[in-house]
Image (cartoon, rainbow over all chains, first blue to last red; front, side):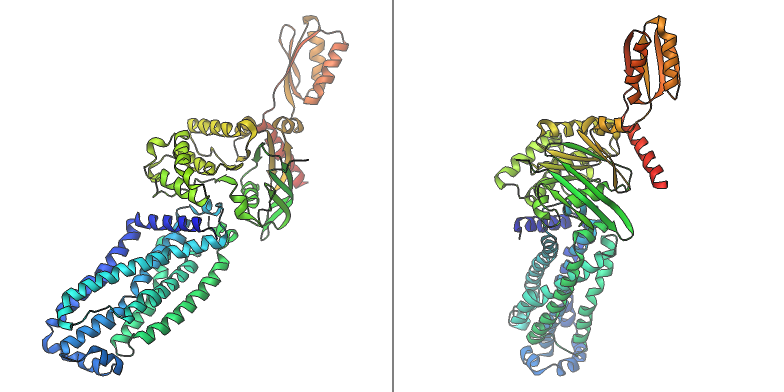
Length: 269
Length: 318
């Protein structure tokens, strides 16, 4: 493997993303919105909730016993805060790797085609496999990086806002660790796989990004299911989901790699 | 021992579905030669470059680039070749220096040499003053120069230049041609130039290969190709004035365009086959004429190309 070339392509792809405002902006805005402003609004709303918080009672009652235990009892306001900040936002968090991977993969695959820079890359002394790997690693590395920064922002924000009420560190747990290093990268890889397939069929970045956006739907379904009390993303579910998503992403990426051949890519030049 | 040719093709054929882009193409190009690959759009020039760099596999036949099979050993072949693509293929969001650094990494240029080589190329291609500006703000000529610098970054012994002066203004074209000439100097590099500019090909190339609908219709030095085209030419003959009328009459019988007096002892002949010139001169001498000067017109590659394409069209239709 020509790791020097792979690294160069990864660094260049990320540099190009940083220099395109339309591409780069969502990478800043979404984490700040989801993991600083939204939790802050949630904490403020819960504190001001008063009697309206009673409506959350039935939701907490249907939670699995291990989650109820983890909420740790105490006032309803505290339990709701723990549930929201520890568990509900954990599902929101999956949006970050999906969004990052979708944006960067769309720019890297479809954007390269749109900018007409693909041909020169095809004449480089890389193999098809190295080129494909480089194109996959860029978005995935960025997704892990942005996820870690988003998580750090979230930890600081929620513990400053609600740490005293809850009495222990929020979002510093095996579940969040698993999301950061296992489930998050898995959904990111799935997003990349979808974008690889989509990018081969579209003309440019916007089209690829919009079509690839459908990948966020399973996460939305997960968020809604958890809000409805149908399931809770705990350590076991996160581990199992991660394994399933990695398997699907791996299979799609493997199939898509057959299309990532110079002969086929030339048709897009 | 025979030196390995830089480029070889043997019965090289490439089909895209029903369309045959290249058919039974064979050639051998020794190292150090500058070869023009000429032909209309769709004649198979770019397909040839792609096949020789392992971007496409042949449908049949074989190719060898610098002694290697480009399809089996693509990365090794591309590591030693530089390709100037028809469009510069540059990232507008990068500066020239960043772009060259990226390509240096990709071509595994020794780390300690990267900065020096980039500075040299920026200087050589007159881009040093704008090296840290983004490519998006470059003129077409600057982009073409940067793309040319990219192809030389790893000092390849083999260059493929696809339309190096297409869409450039005359001054930029002259500059690029000068650069190509300097790259060819010393016969240290093999250069394959695809161009529609036949004057450029005649000026720069040791040899030209003309493709038509994927087949080679001519292959040789520019003068061999022009000679082979058998184009009737104009000839000016100066004889002693006493034999001027005889000369005009004899020449007119051999030339399709006739012959006219162009001054005392001067005869202008039109439409004479080049190979008929020696016989004409011999006949004039046999009549006792003193032949002082015979000036056949030079056939341009452009005229030969048009003639060859015309012949090929005729053959295809026949």
